[in-house]
Image 1 (cartoon, helix red, strand yellow):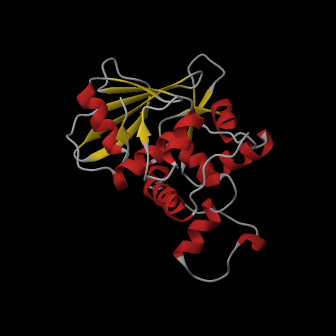
Image 2 (tube, one colour):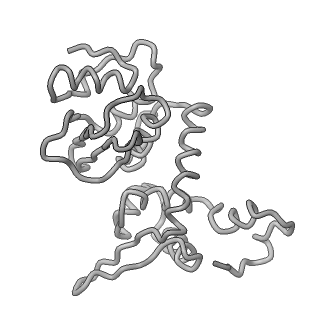
Length: 224
C-alpha cells in the first residue's frame, strides 16, 4: 500500500506513524473512515453526514483512500449509485478512531452547540464507545434500538462482553429509545452526576426491569 506524495507532504524522517499520517492525516479523511464503520455508504450519504465538506474535496479524499487501499468502490448493478465500503486495511482503523473518540470524551468533552449538526452515525459510534468503556457488566444478548426521526434506526447489541453498533432496528429490542440525535448527544455528554432517564426529550419503551438496566448502563437514575 504505497502512495506517491508530493515533497511538501512528506515528513522526511523515518517513523511508521508519520507514514500513516501521510495517508490518513488530512482533514476529513478519518471522518470518512468513521462514517463507513457501520457499513457501505453512497457519495450523497457521506456528503450529508460530513455536513460541510465540499463535493470536490470529498471526491479527492475518496480517491486518495481508494488508491491507498482503505476503501473500495462498488457500483450497484443496473443503477447509477456507487457504494463505498472499507477494505480490511480500512477496518483496521476502527480501534484508532474509537480511541480518538474516547480521548475526546475524557479530555475535550463539550455538548453540541446551538445550530451544530449532530449526525447519527458518529453519535451512535460514540455511544458504543462510551458503553464499552464505562457501562457496568451486563448480560450478553441485550439489544437496544434508537429511533431518530427522519434519520433512521440504530441498534446496539451486547455479545461476548462487547457492544457493537449497526444501522437498522430490531423487531423486539429489550429497550427502544425515541429521541433526536441532538437530545441524545446532549445526554451522553452531560455530567454523570445527576443523570436521569427518561427525559422530556428522550422517551423509552421496555419493561421496567429493562429500563432500569438501560439507565444503569448510562450511569443514570431511572425516573420512570
